Amino acid sequence: MIGKLNHVGVATPSIEDSVRLYRDMLGATSIGEKFVMEEQGVWVCFVNLPNSQIELIEPYGEASPIRAFLEKNPKGGQHHVCFEVVDIEAARDDLAAKGATVLNGGKPRIGAHGVPVIFVHPKDMGGVLVELMETPKGAHR
Image 1 (cartoon, rainbow, N blue to C red):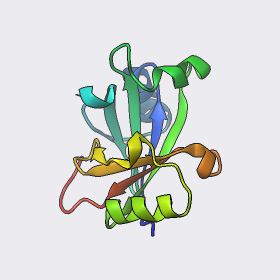
Image 2 (image 1 turned 90 degrees about the vertical axis):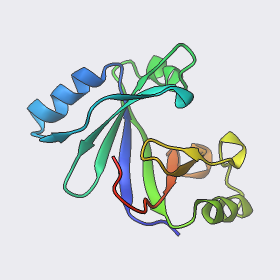
Image 3 (image 1 turned 90 degrees about the horizontal axis):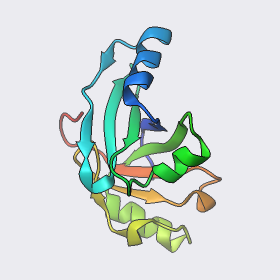
């Protein structure tokens, strides 16, 4: 069902500080611009790697869903892993049929790459928040 690992989501209280870490400490040379996703309550910035991406996410607004994560992990940390799937609705239906809890009522929404995504509750994924995204048809962030 799952395809390649697309990205690892890392929650951070400061994208700017995290960019410095990935650039200065780890030598990342391809880093996208910070942009807001108001509907999801996050700022986003992608660190491009040879085989994947790191998605830096910072709270946007008081109702940001990652505020609670950062309250428990004030310095930030790994928030989710994202895998590509060919058909997001088929993947959702398959997971639901197997008893997994798909968040947001199972309704896909458009993610940071501009394609439909869903999240699967960590309790059903070995303690890991899993994002599934439909494989982009063309270029994406």
